[in-house]
Image (cartoon, rainbow, N blue to C red; front, top):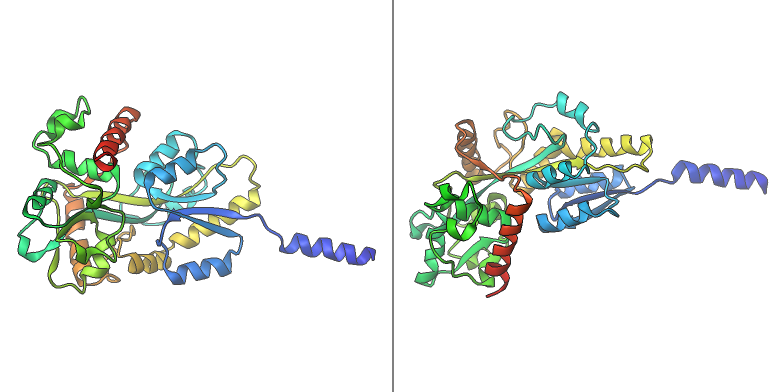
Length: 331
């Protein structure tokens, strides 16, 4: 009986493990990578989210127990300021890999995951919709438009495309930045156009969201914004946990390394149609239209003719959220 207890205790120690919690955008890992993750790391628990605001609230919560998070660049910066990021955990990986310098967040110490550009996708017979106000004007022609359902991305575009944008630098007052009053309805907003783009005449969103369907829709095309396409990157961060054992941290680093290695980045890029952060990645895994877009955007990056989503301060976020609630929800 004593021997059985010893064997039971030994086997429990050998095969038991602490759960490792990953927070990630929904539908953001290829099926092959997900399957291999489950097999290789059965202790990994994945939670998915659909908006930056949701992710930020989860991760800034003092009771948060997430170990790894894949988040947008401005969310990663806010986590850094809040002291939530394990600064040195991924440093060794960052120094060994060759990432595009323009995509790195040097002060954050998170691994680049994938990156994207916002753009207009439109029916070809509408000319060139290269400005958010041109898109909004289509409503006057009874055209169906779609807008990315994210406050920071949408408001950034409104300000960039306004001829009053220079007046926004000293005092962030959105209504003074805009060219005109906006007539919007809740039906204009969508978090994903992947399966619904054919319902719209034109839309403003992230390129990866619409790349898959428009590859087979000859009547649609991409149009980049005339004033600085917005670039957004997603980053894998290891989060602080004072109760974590050293062996658990090593396992977390192994998982982070696996998810973001070049082979799995290729698979995730092929699946999502987003861009790889690795140097000299030509986008060979991408279909024709998206590969052409990738080439154009990389040239713009070299000439610094793009706008990275900024880390808005607390006052600016308050102004953005107030504006967003008014235009998005109170109509």
